[in-house]
Length: 114
Image (cartoon, rainbow, N blue to C red; front, side):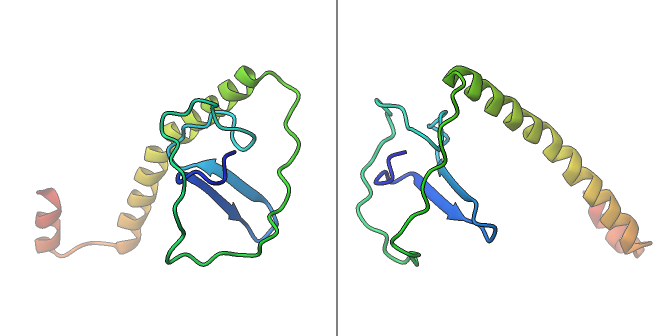
């Protein structure tokens, strides 16, 4: 990945796992590489207002030996699963919250219908 790109992000979680990605989702082979001719590449000018961690970045894990197209297809399938499940989960949580709130006053029920 081009770490000097304006759209590159990296996050380190408490478990030590590091996520490296393009905010614009333009790097299908993340976290290993960006496209050589990326149309959205912009050199980062500065990180004003951000708190930066240690200067020693954890090493990037080894690139898998599988075909890059297979990896991209697998990641696309995973993204499709998440995008499909998301609205269903949100609707279920909303129903649970509505039930937990109990009966509503008549005026609140009327406002919700609008």
